[in-house]
Length: 380
Image (cartoon, rainbow, N blue to C red; front, side, top):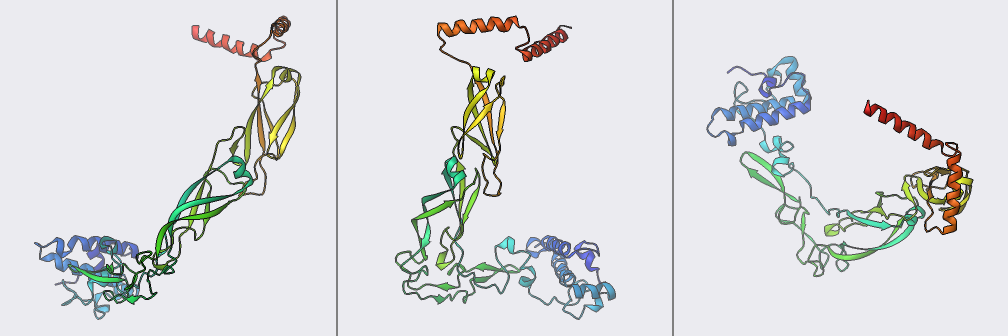
């Protein structure tokens, strides 16, 4: 039978990359696998052709020789198979498919080493802090339930400290399983990938090397943290099984709402009520800041909603060396519970303002002009 082109067998171009070659081989091999084509005698030959093509093309030196001189240049390197490729394929199917189908069968490649002590899981908690604590920093003591290393056996899981090589996997932590034509690796069921077994397990932890307890920790919250920030404490997570290293502890910061300030990055915002007279005539008001009260001068004729900026009175972020600003918005407060005398005085003031026309209310004139224009357009 005439020899076939290796690229044609895998359905790829001659310029295909190694990743494309590997993907094409997986596709072709799965298509013609004998287990899937029991009623098609030719499937096995096509399957072996795909194996042979992949074995040659995945090796750059073999591929270069094949591209330059044809199949004869590689026919003496174990590259023989059906359909013009010789009498029989020389090789281990498990070796060829180990890296490609390990995700399908959950195994690994032959020759894997023992997993050894495994790292413990990371732990994630949420810590609630006041705004003042987040801005200035604070030390918090917490109690968390977690897996800790067993003291009696020193985390080994063995009562006498002795471990024996697992006879099932000979200390490799993995066993070789045959599934049809595939030979794949799986975690040893007896030692669970450790490569060693304990004949005299610790009574305190049941041979696990760790047990669940409540751990007391002191967490230092640095100054300037903000909502959603995360603090990592290395090695403060769960202890690893069989003496493995501990995972990490992640502390997610949640800042409680504040009665005065709202924070946005390095900036602080607050609202300050001022009386009607101060807004009209101007004056001074006391503004709270992180470093104490400061005096803010309010100019005469200040309108409600006016925002003042106090530079350097915001937050010094944990990520920067600069300090943000404080923005204070004033709201003119309408007086309530007026006495008869106060009402009489306000009425006299109102009469003088009306007599002045639009002189004392420039914004009102502009607003009414816009309203009139709008109504004229609507009535056409």
